[in-house]
Image 1 (tube, rainbow, N blue to C red):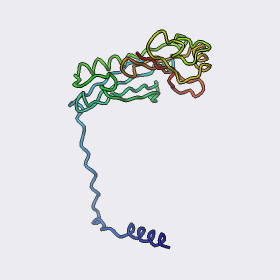
Image 2 (cartoon, rainbow, N blue to C red):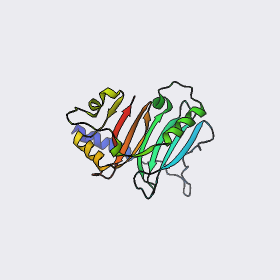
Image 3 (cartoon, rainbow, N blue to C red):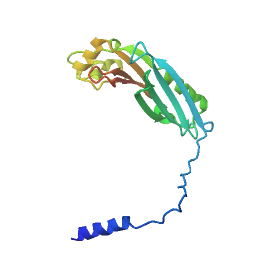
Image 4 (cartoon, one colour):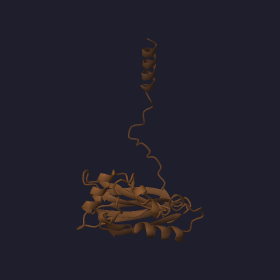
Length: 196
């Protein structure tokens, strides 16, 4: 009973009449301030890359945008020839480089240049995950660095054998990731991570 009474009171409060605007009066639109892209740290680079369709190049767009280069958000967007987003990621200069601010326009520009130069490759070029090794990392432990995959050994080796198109890019300080178009889902997915 108490719940029904409380619900009725709340409903009545929501339905109280409000002052009507005078006839013919328009609602005031919310004030929106334009963003001045010329100020702060605002840079962009684009580069075509062959990945999802060998006959129609994809486009990588990398951007830095923020009130300063220390505060800028870095974005990586990969689009197919139709403009559909295939892959996107965002971070900060500090997160991608493990360096401390201040960051200059020149440092950000150089990072964007390297980030936009993702490399097209084939899965057949990836290191083998030898039979009996517990992980891809264990198979290459003597080489130093970190190497991993989200796939099981069977799926990883199957994708290697198919020699699929692959796109490798930076994803952090001295680290990278390689994407493939997954044969089952027909969507980009991470094939491998590698780092120092």
